[in-house]
Amino acid sequence: MNRSKIHKNDNAARAAWMYYIYKMNQDEIAKTMGISRQRAQRLISLAVNENLVNFKINHSIVSCQELSLELKKKFNLMNVDVAPNVSNKIDKLDGIVNLASKTIDTFLMAKKPMNLIFGSGLILSKVADKLSPVTCLQHKIVSNIGNHGPDGLEPPYFVLGRISQNVESNFFPFTVPIYSSSKEVQKFFLNYLPVKKTIKLIKNFDACFVTIGGFASKKTAGLLRDSLIDDDKYHLMKSKGVVGQINGVCFDENGKIIKNIDNYIPMSILPDANLKKPVIAFAGGSDRVLAIKAALNGRLVNGLITDEVTAEKLL
Image 1 (cartoon, rainbow, N blue to C red):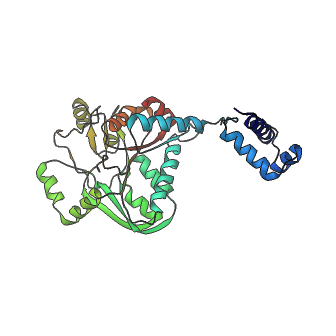
Image 2 (cartoon, rainbow, N blue to C red):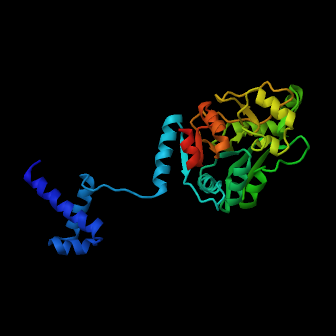
């Protein structure tokens, strides 16, 4: 390094020290060093560019950013966001819900017309309640899960109705049961013209948002909790290797969809996560780690918004 550059770096280091350590402004630095304000500004920039200054942010958000990058690399994901740990007094889902609502808000506010596909679940229902009020008639808001359970009632966490409370857009429900009991019943519903139109929108999606349901225990199995299946069906599914589900579509520990379950044929249509369009899951919790990891490995989704503890367990 020549003497001129050494001298310049020395001055840059001095300027950076005064700016970052002594908290002096650029006018004060210029006066102290006997240079112009513009020269002081250039020296501070030079100190950063020459790696004379190293920044360290002491905040949990830094570890979350690192976890996001590691998850993205490990599972080859398009979108990853990790919410920091929260105190016991706060709902542990709140971090995921806040990040998820901001993500969806971004899509809703886009000017380009899009087919935005929504699944169902507890987290998504909380997200729907937090969405910013917006008019986006350029979009089509589409459900890819049936809008009634075996008892004919709307599922507890059906999302489309909640979204419509804050968002003015074009809504397309999937007017089929969540699952059918036979191939014949499934074929009957899927041949219904309005359903065919909805399926076309789902297959031509621009972004899709889902949750991942666990199957680790009866207490945490959403299908059982919401009375969509009974105890016998739950145990049968467990015996078939089910570790999780997305919109009622069950899969094993490798993320392979399990189709042969007695009298249980899910009607939901999962968009193809290999099309390089965002299929983002909002999921977290120790009881769902196995299900989330399986869904990521099976490429059922290509994006994830989760919490810090879950992210660490996935790596």
